[in-house]
Image 1 (tube, rainbow, N blue to C red):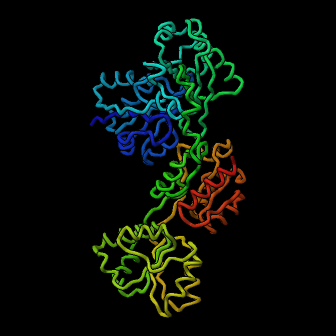
Image 2 (spheres, helix red, strand yellow):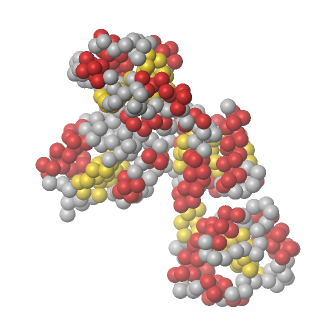
Image 3 (cartoon, helix red, strand yellow):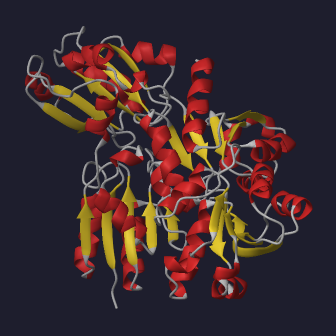
Length: 502
């Protein structure tokens, strides 16, 4: 059976500008054919079991020719696959999406097009440049700055100048001098404001604002990287007055978040709201144990326990999932008292209409053990459903201080996970990441597994607690610890460090 192809625009880079439909389609993909300009945060949405084909398209640097890409889409669809052609920006704005559709139509392959946010609009907006303004211009023109090697521009510069509108050139950095010269020869005012906008919507975003006659010289003086776009028009003079991204507390900072994938969104959202670019690279993956017979047996006699102890939000989720599977409702907990390690675990419990009887003042195993030892009685029956490799301080303290019967039951495994698409080691070696956030000792260990050979003194780590910090210290990282073991406190610590850095 023939599959289907979706041409999906990934936007400029900021995942907040990726469309909801694009995200939905991408999460269901079986094959993803992606470009080099697709943002890292978008790539992280690709399902782990999807086949990934990097066609790496950048100006004059193609891993695969366009004709080959077209054929790949057809071949994969004919295998019955759900194929996503993931393109930076919008598929039809100089993205050669039309050429890809031609072969799909010829071969009778079903397809859909999911538009994306183009850099021609979003990057100026992130730099405080409104591409239209009633007092300055009445039109907008988007032009490809790319030309075939050895050929002259097929651009009517005189017509562009006569429009008196805003001009946006995409893929034109290497030909900046030719573009400016063409506009000047066509009669444009040499003092017309112009800007080169570099790596827009990312932490590395910056702009160079000058005039049409001086922009090339200014760019040579200050240096430029790709991707970048050229904007010409009076609206460029508004950039400094209208800038907003630079005023966010974490603007210009790139933060690595290592939490498990199912827990990563809350932390990332808090950091992004403060202006940071967030690279989500889960260092661990949580997998429920295949054999839950011990937990099932405990649920059968749940009324015999005096305390039920949770040491992570994941432990809460898996426990109640098994209760549901065994058709046991919340009333079965009866008189069982509840203890949790911290506020995050308490919140997960509260989603089920339950509130813990005990939360220690400090959110780590030793503190939980001491607090629980003071509350429970000799002979109490205590159930602790948690990770297979759990910290033993909790159990040791309870057995030493109280003659309690403890059922320490593994309900999930922690598996170290790396990224197949992003080279974490290289990110740190290049100095592109300002801080790495670790929320458990296991995320530190998982990160180390994925970055073997890295000089860990290059990693500035923000840790959520003592044990996490100790694991990072052992690797030689430069470490900081949040005041409290909460997501908000971690974000506050990152913001504090970034402000000191500035």
